[in-house]
Picture 1 (cartoon, rainbow, N blue to C red):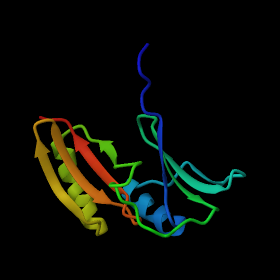
Picture 2: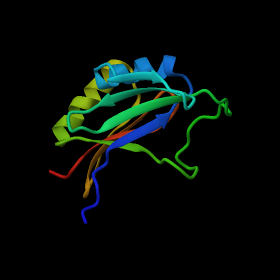
Picture 3: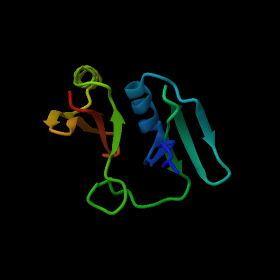
Length: 131
């Protein structure tokens, strides 16, 4: 049996009115879904060219206002795949144009990464395999 491919990622954000426009600008497209569910959350969902779905959720239930940290059990970061290091360089320019801070491209034997954070501090990364 083959292990299934990643189908979707869903992140919880504090405020869709802040995070929604930020992700629209980053992704460069409108979500394919914007709904408030009977389950008690509103979500925006994008579909990437490879079929993977990426969503952000804001739950109706109130919780503490603390920021995300990858040092708690749970999500460490979300990595978006790039084909080449050149594509990462294009993302550096795009993040710069959007005013999104980042750590620059970091090269390692297993590939190159470009780390940054969303408005809630959620760790995100663009990653390319080694040349």
